[in-house]
Every structure is written in structure tokens, then in C-alpha cells.
Length: 363
Image (cartoon, rainbow, N blue to C red; front, top):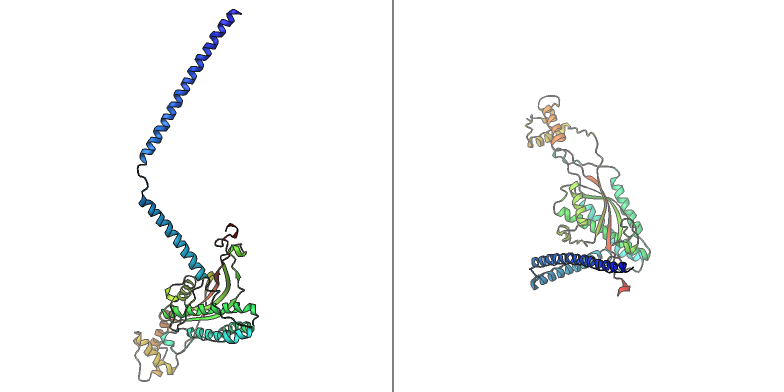
């Protein structure tokens, strides 16, 4: 027992020595890690010798202010331009008053303006004096105007504003077309408005959203059909959705665009009906005139004293037939416009859109 007590003192002493060695090793390792971290931090600090100056702060502040002012300018422009479709309308006490004071004269002016832009299709020099006609086209155009006028005869008071919006859309279309023609777009084709149909004014559905707070726009959908050159169709759509100084300046008749937002949903073009074969007869009385027109283009036809005696089967008469065939089928062919279908939405900015409306609860 005494021997065990002596050994216990030795064991306890031995364990204490061992524990001290372990703690000494841990301390050395911890110190080494700390020194290494301090050395790394010191190196990083040495690399960051350039401290932001007052000039750097001023530049950052100026950039921030420019961003803020540009954001405010964009918001103001969106609200002002975006409101041009719903503002500045005349007030009327009844639908009958609206029709007599505003709708009837406005419709007549619009019909006259569109009629002035409608031109006969350009014809080859050899067919000067002739024109291409298609039965039924004019009647469809008349029906569109007649339907619109019937709807504006005596609308209920709550529908007057919607009728005024329709007139504004047609005026914007007419002014844009007039200005494009003035600037030389479309060549000799002009533009013919053949059909148009309006839908109810309301929230513009954006994707699957139809709630007022989900859409940035209120809009009036309109479908149009026109006949014009392909280049005119492209320029018209571009100017309607992205107005530039080309059409925003007044026209020769002092008509001025409002420049309200117009959204494009669809544009489609197709060829109008073209006959596969056209027979062109040159009778005796027309032989001399036809030969002279072809000679102006270098045909080199020698006319006899009596051009009526030219034989189409031989000699100069056959030469006349061949020159006319080449001219009409290869060089100066009949050109027709394209038919253009447009689906547009005349829009006004929605001030209740959740992205711009202030949250009253946080005021």
C-alpha cells in the first residue's frame, strides 16, 4: 500500500509533465497560425495604399445624381407622353351633340384625307391611260366608314370618350401616312385604308396579367388593313411605335401627331390578287403610238407611211409585237401594292401600375 502511494505520486507527476508538453505544443502551433494570419493581413493592407480621395467621392456622387435625374426625366416623359391618348378631349352633354359638333365633321375630314392619299396604281408607259381595277374593294372601304358613323350617331354618355379615342387613332394614322408620303416614302403607290375595326378600351393584358396593377398600360386595340408599297408598310409601323422627327413635325396641312404610345401586336403583308395572264391588244389606231413609245426605249422600229398597215406576223409589225412583249414581261411590268394587316393598341400610361404607384401604407 505504501509502495502504491509512492508510485501514485510519480504517476501524477508524470501526467502533469505530459500535459504540460502537450499544452506547450498547442501554444506553439496557435502562435504560428496567428503570426501567419497577421503577416497575411499586413501584406493585404500594404497593397491597399490608395485611399479614396474627395475627388473620387465627388465623382461617385455626380454619377448617382445623374442616374437619379435621368430616372426622374424618364418617369416624367412616360407620364406626359403616355397620357396624350386620354387627355385634352372636348366635353359634350349628349351623344347627339357629340356627333353633330365633333364626330360628323371629323369623319368627313378623315375620309377626305385618306381619299387624297389613295392613288391609282402606276402603269407601264406602254399602258399609259389604263388602270387596274378590282371589284368590291371600294365597297369594303365604304362599309368600314359607314359602320363607324352609325356607332357615333348617338352614343351613350359613358361611350363618348371611347368614340373620341377612335377618332384620335384614325387622325394619328392619317397624319403619320401624310408625313411619310411628303418625305417620299412609298413611291407612286400612296396608301389606301380599306378596313378598320376597334375594340373596347381597357387594361392592356401583358402576358397572363389582366389586373389593373399588373399592367403598365390602358389600351384600345384596333385592326387595320391597308394597301401600299412594302417599304411604306415597314416605315409606317416603325413611325407609329417609335415616333421620330420625320412624322412628329406638322404636315403641309398643319396636321400634328399627338405621339401617344402605340403597341404593335401583329404585322402581316400579302400580295393582292394578280391575274395570271393579261391580254394586251394593239389595234390599228394604237400601232403608231405604241411603236413610238417603244422607240423611245430603243426598240428601233421603222414606221411606214401608214403605221396601221404594220403586219404583226412579219417585218416591222412583228418587231413591234416582240418589243412590246419584252417591255411588258421583262422591263416595265405592271406593279401592284401589297395588302398590309396590322393589329395595334393605342395606349395610355397606367398610373396605378404597381411599379410606379406609391404604397400609401409606407407614407
